[in-house]
Image 1: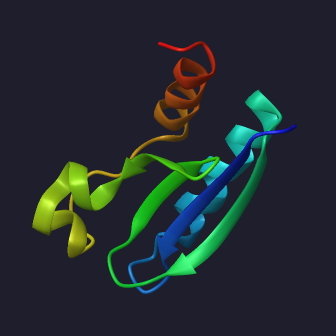
Image 2 (image 1 turned 90 degrees about the vertical axis):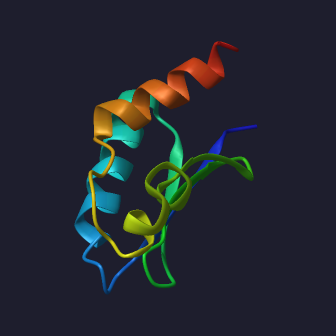
Length: 88
């Protein structure tokens, strides 16, 4: 069975292009199925098979909830997924 990645993002905060960029990198480099879903204010969260692997709110606190601060790069998320697939 193929792994499923879901990227939840806040459209109002302008995270749509970032979500699509990360999704394209995951598809290209790992061959995984990715779905991008608009979500509530300040959200930028990535799940693999129902397990959260990145949550902007947890990594950035209130700044992340306000849409401020650094966002993950495609390379960082691809590496997180690679580490999960190798059990690291």
